[in-house]
Image (cartoon, rainbow, N blue to C red; front, side, top):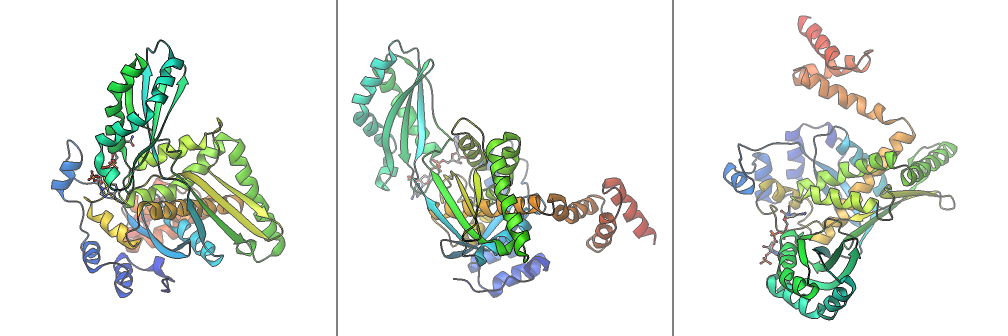
Length: 423
Ligand code: NDP
């Protein structure tokens, strides 16, 4: 377990932060050099990854230090453009570590693919025929992507469901260390001729589902309510309010969407940093949020009055990968993965879901106590100062004056900057 100190890390300059990493040998020498030299994706590689490429697009790359998951400490890379996200995650992770950190569990790791059949005259009869042929169909899917079977994975279970005009055939596939979109799509397409013949129908499409309901991960944490306030009564009051906030997100979809957006502030930043497909993770998370037919908050918080602890839990699909896609192509992803000691796909999933729960804790704590704007104002003022064209030295003064100004907006920032320069 790492015992280094992160006190004052947020106050350092980026160069001093890099020195801190070097002094504590947190990265391999090769990746430290990549970071020190701001080495980005090459134009040549970028041009292979997407179409009509003109250049590369940069975003801040940060870390949330000292996050304890299942007894191990991680420094989680985060790529985000939103102020206060990394600060909030760092604050929450520090508090949660003091109470023993997160425990996280991967329930399963299978990706689901589907073939939607239409124009099937007798769906029940077709369903029976497909069921009888399921061993043959699974063998066919295996033969279409033998390398994943050699790696110990591959298709495991095939089932059918009748939904309106469709007979849908689902296949659950163990994609091992990959996210598996391409391999599952290959398998589903390989099944189409046989499925059309068995059903005497036509295939509308064959594709993986991003509702990765068989790739669920749960993170849990228990915090002593003393971390909410030193005053016992206030701490209890705040713990009850956080539990109420959790209840609200279960019943009000307007609040649930924002509650979940806060969770994804952390999740997306780590998913992006580790080279994973954040659209797939977002789609899966939001679809899972309405798995019982009602869109709900993905996390819950309860106040355990006996233990005087706040108990948080977050469950969502997290089919992230440690290889495949663009993971091996981007040098920044190599640095990000190095921060996490190059975790396998399951470990990475537990880290990312824990970060989502930390982010959620910070948001709910702020919302139910000081309000969200108190913490955001300084960062917002900083963005306004930068947008107005302030230098790093001028920014400090502009922020100070903006915070106490009547209208904190772009116009005021420009007026303050103009006045500073005049003086
Ligand atoms: P790849 O097509 O890159 O396949 C995974 C690769 O990883 C294979 O080449 C595989 O080698 C290799 N590999 C090495 N070691 C392992 C291991 N231990 N376990 C598994 N694979 C290993 O990626 P995916 O199939 O994972 O697809 C992900 C990509 O698909 C992402 O870029 C995603 O954005 C995109 N995508 C997403 C869709 C969606 O979400 N709806 C739809 C379509 C595409 P080998 O072949 O030798 O086994």
